[in-house]
Length: 168
Image 1 (cartoon, helix red, strand yellow):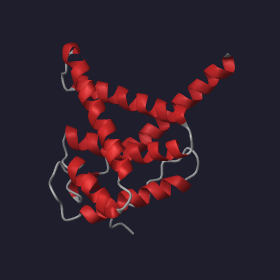
Image 2: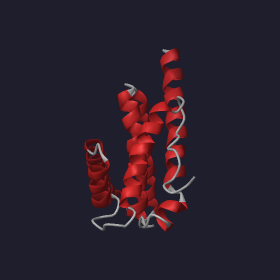
Image 3: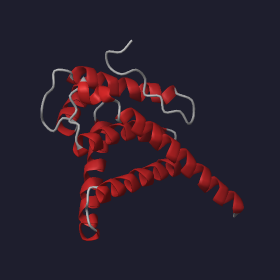
Image 4: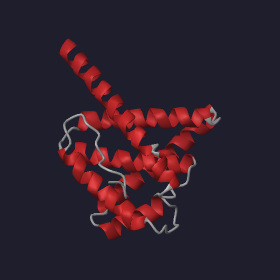
């Protein structure tokens, strides 16, 4: 029993560290300034979801379902907190959280189905750029696919997405 509690606490701690790494990368000004991701609630949600997808994809491949679930739980706790900070009341929270869950899982499915730069670019235009086609879409798609490969070989517990597009 104590071992199970200790393991649960370790998983939650690992999920919190992983979440912090996802947030740190998602908040890089480079995405908003250079790659023209809208600096808005939706743009930040989309970047967070994109980077969460990359990590969750790795965890899924490794069969680490408990850590993946703890990470999703941490993400949705943060979504709830963000909505409350924006003034969403208790009555609207259920509907808004359902909308966010639908958007989150829809994006995960779209990114999972995208296996090459062209299909990843299409998914990014639809989700990250809300239908607008930026000139840098090829670089963004290449970044996502490269980051997915880099994460596969990063040390356990590490959240290394690799270099930002266009950086040395």
